[in-house]
Length: 110
Length: 117
Image (cartoon, rainbow over all chains, first blue to last red; front, side):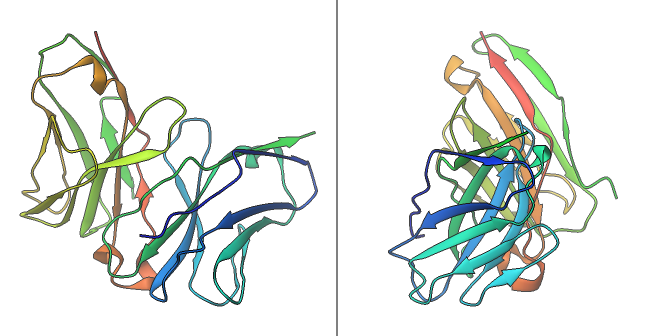
């Protein structure tokens, strides 16, 4: 699985959009980009995933660059409950496991 | 559905003791896995299973055993607990082991906090 690089921490004001970057420069054609988050030592929670096209669901949007070497998770209107560690994971569709890195600790400030 | 459940929530062991962490899911998921998370770290995969009767090792399997006799249950056994196994343990499950993109969301349990003295 390709490795990912994320900033260790970020801050965002409540009500603003939170944009979390992820670099995955060695990603291969069959590998998906997944995002999970972990709120205060709870079990990780799935957010979104994508292959090439941008994706949107009720939680977030995922923007993947055309060369697929980086992506951005967007929380459009961050709330205090979005404070968490966010993990960007790259995984082959045929692989059976997720490999977690250190993630980005996102703090939403009132 | 209860989702993924784990018992116990907390456990304290002495060095050398053995115990089993329980994990169950009621979503008929084929794929189940165990992770450990040390303070300030990401999750590391211990063992996983793609179906009943099939298990395989992850990144950090030493000191742990697993079995998968039913689709619902995936217990993790600590054979002889060591202080280095002090951690939070998470169980997870999903459909299809990621073969089907539309159903490959992985669901995590609430975790078991284990301290080995």
